[in-house]
Image 1 (cartoon, rainbow, N blue to C red):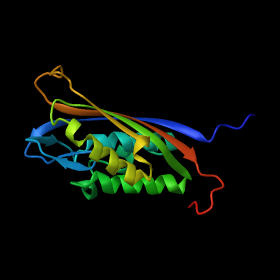
Image 2 (spheres, rainbow, N blue to C red):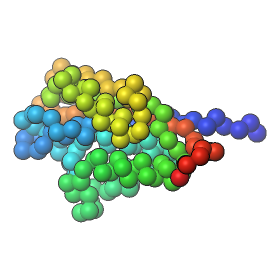
Image 3 (tube, rainbow, N blue to C red):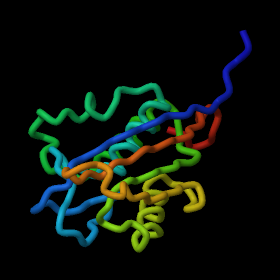
Image 4 (cartoon, rainbow, N blue to C red):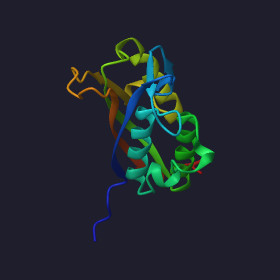
Length: 168
């Protein structure tokens, strides 16, 4: 049998209701907004979708299995901390991110003013150059009905880290 290429691709998706009284955390940043994503953790739909894409590409359990929303340990957890745990699991199976692409759909907050900062933060966390992390913001044009949400789709490309010096 021909060996498989040392790359893998994963797809992630997440959606959270936007509710008053919650911090609006997206892509690891706290954004100014009157509403924020509801959730057991910080509700960061961007990082949740990204983590599921990374985990899926590596063939690991999904986010809900690793960090269940009925476990009090994860209540209010920072998704940046969860991302660090996911990246540690990728290192254990000798996988590393190559690039990620994110599409975020919400009517508020407006992502354009924060796009570069989110890309830079995610790139730094993943150990990638900024041009390997893309983020696109889309509006729903109020097509979601009376309940406001933030939704994110993520694609992640990983590579195997076979014979690298210094690989974990």
